[in-house]
Image 1 (cartoon, one colour):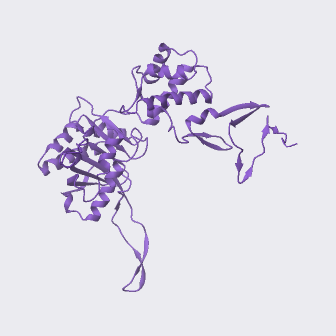
Image 2 (cartoon, rainbow, N blue to C red):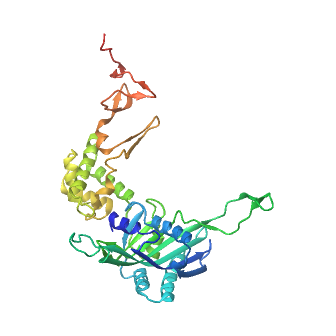
Image 3 (cartoon, rainbow, N blue to C red):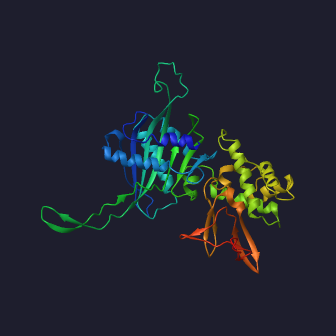
Length: 397
């Protein structure tokens, strides 16, 4: 799935939408520090009150929110796994019997509880529904409505949410005209911040892909590997942050003793950004060791060759055929996404402007120098230009 596929289904989670039909909702309550299901309940989604529906709709949208490879991950199911979740979910998706579907989902919950206990009460919510997407490129002369022909996508969505203790509050009783302490013992289900979830099957270019599942992490770049491997039975995935670290290690390995200055690093980012720009129509542009070799050579790093780059790939990733997603290894190009942190000050700068920053040595000290086109103004005061760190002569004299 790409970000367009995800956005397309996420925006359908709203009330009174004829392009989305949610058939059943199944809630499972798990007590903290327990490996048992405390309670479960299934009912038709349409029987919920509108206020409840809206709470759940917002929750489901949050499960599908975030950047790919940061919070959302398309995972491939492992092969030859006994009692694999791919088969369980597929059977649940195809089943016409509600009890059978519930049984399959309880099977997934049992896998969540195997060798795992949670520090707080957890509510696991499953929905089974159908998402319809109108076909595009309809003829302008056609009298047929765009909704007369649609792609139909049956799906299962899971959302895991923690509970929290009710707030201690003081209330005013209008009838008895007195202040009272509000005593509430029932836990509150926090639907505003799901801790995990998934969408099955993955949907790419209007086609269902039952070999992949879209996994949602609770926090950016923090994957639950127990959930991925033991619950979903899916293959591990690198986060964007991990991808970037691996790329940086490969560059350092290839460069060896060479010191990389800001100009060279800026060139590296420029070259990768150019690859992204040239492949806008491609789903996700990727870089293998040959592409990385071209990037490093074009960026001004000396003594770069295929053998050295291929060896670096094998040393760092243990896989010379490893491919990077270009978007993962370059900071957001058109924003001040690079952070330069020092004890004295923190600076934010865009990758394309990194070349205008220098670290220089003068009189035995290190200085961070930036090239600017205008006089610097601090708190309304224009700074006096200095030459070689001494006061510049007044040109008006």
